[in-house]
Length: 135
Image 1: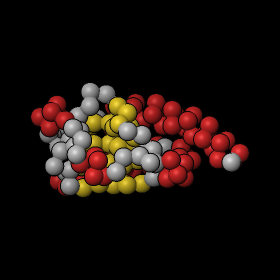
Image 2: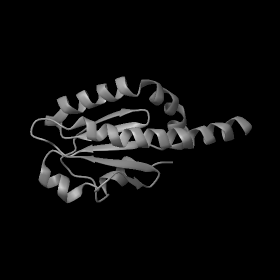
Image 3: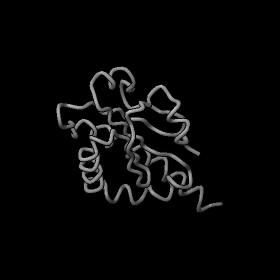
Image 4: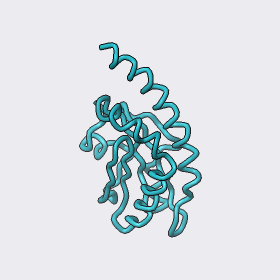
């Protein structure tokens, strides 16, 4: 299984400002409640850009417990104090720290990471799918 919420809360990447979350298949977005509009915007952009990819990953993610955790830090100070410097593996999951840019977020930076991560997950999951079919 991937990490549990209680393990994430106790990790060096978590900040108590994260009091909101969006869970959908392999992607989980954690954010401060006052950034909910940005989190929803990010969620809908991810759904549009990666619709087919995410559909293919949902079942495998559920079975294997692998997720992409996007941590939207509310301030630059928190980002520099808690965020991983790049996308990092954490337990079976992958963490991406997002730095605020005023009242917005540079989504293209997130999509650059997600393009690579989702491609890697798809490659891993195609191998897992073959294993599950053969079992």
